[in-house]
Amino acid sequence: MRRHCTLIACVLLAAVRAAYAYPGDEVYARPGVLVDIGGRKLNLYCTGWGAPTIVLESGLGGRASAWAQVQPLIAAHHRRVCSYDRAGYGFSDPDAKPRTASRIADDLYVALRKAHLHGPYVLVAATYGAFPVRLLAGRHQKAIAGLVLLNPSPEDEELTPASSTVERIDSAGLNSAKTCLESAKRGALAALTPERERCVGAANPALSSELNARRLDLLSKPATWGAIVSEWSNIVHSAAQVKAARGSRYEFALTVISASEEPPFNGSDEDVRAMHQTWLNWDKWQHDIAALSANSRLLHTKGSGRVVESSDPAMVAAAIEETIARSKPVTR
Image (cartoon, rainbow, N blue to C red; front, side, top):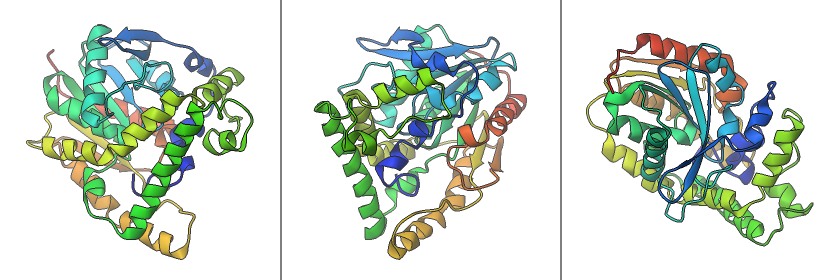
């Protein structure tokens, strides 16, 4: 997770700094529709009505509630929009198998079919979530009306040899997540302990009290940390899966939203220099992803924020509508 995530606070960026509250965000504090995908259940929240169906995929550490600002904006445009908790997150059952992008993509597609949401789909993904969504889109192109990617993680970022400094920063973040997993297994995150403060953090005043209480409860569970550790540990494998799947260009509309400025990084001068070198490749990687479709647009945010789904939800909603306008009719 170079550049995006380093210490454990970055891993939980989407979860701990989740969207500012909107009236009704407490819907994410309880299960939506639990869909059996074959011995496990995934939790879906679907609102609104109309075609195409918008499907929201969170970044690493994120749950459906990461879309708390975007989802109602899309539903207001008379669209059917669904967010969900990946396996192990929120109210979805954990998965004993390695959480690779390919497995996540398969889970999501089965859940959509079992929930009788047959498309056409516009897939929307943030950061790491771009990996499974790109695989799903490539495998089922004829069911896809469009693709919107928010600061998508580039596969080349994970597959390109990094400096020893960047590797050390990455390892420190993953080791922190593993430590939190062990703490959760011991029940140490369920009480007011230093471990809970480090791994879970304090309540977020931007969220409703009901969602805050549930968030703290969910982030203290081993399943949550197990999912984070499994996804992070397998991220190079996931990147390789995405790289191997790159072939002919997509036939549907694609929009990429990318940060326009380098994100701040707190660390030693050596660490800051190393992360800056990674950033220098960022714009090229984003252009490479946008080039996956002949019908594409590359947009830039106003700043360095990586969680555009909460920092500028109006931009995301507008990009989704514009992508739909550029899309071609899709047959199931």
